[in-house]
Amino acid sequence: MQICCLVLGPSFLAAAIYLTLKHFVLYCGPQYSLLKARLYPWIFVGCDFASIVLQAIGGGVAASGGGSGSMKTVNAGNNIIITGIAVQVATMSGCGLLVLLYLWRYRRARPERVAAAEKSDFELSKSQGTLSRKLYIFGAVVVLAYITILIRCIYRIPEMAGGWGNPLMRNEKEFLLLDGM
Image 1 (cartoon, rainbow, N blue to C red):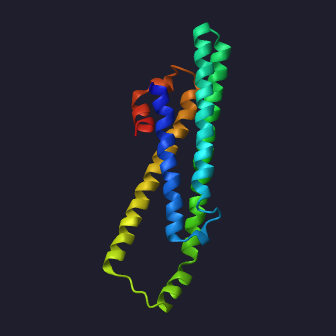
Image 2: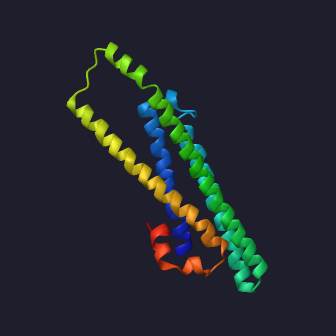
Image 3: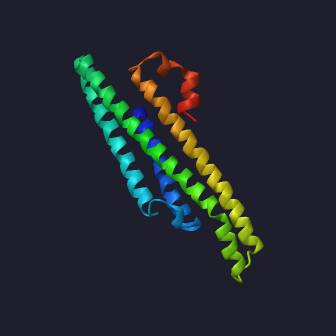
């Protein structure tokens, strides 16, 4: 039960981040994105699903080897789990790079956006200014969630690489800080 929650929890949170990213891109300007906004959840949730499947298969293989006492099977299962976690890290890293590229392109186009706003008769009201600030804060919190999930996924690779019950897995302070946060 604990392993299932450790695998599924961050994946669902990451899926929420990918879906939120889609809406940020649509709101701020899809022209600055390399991908179409609708593809963000499809690609990244799909890759996360693949990582969950790999981790589940690895867990099943490791559990079947544990019951029969075959360390070769347990190690093969652990390697499949590590591969699944690595897929998750690669997926999140790829998404992070696309977000950074999007932000760079968005900021670079600022003079064009300001000039277009000056030409229009549209004037920002106070409520829309507040919304922009709230949206900025929300974006910062989403980035914080992304960073903590990525740290957790990166931590799980060496944690699992040492095998079940290794010293890193038994270090409660590191576990609570890097996995539990």
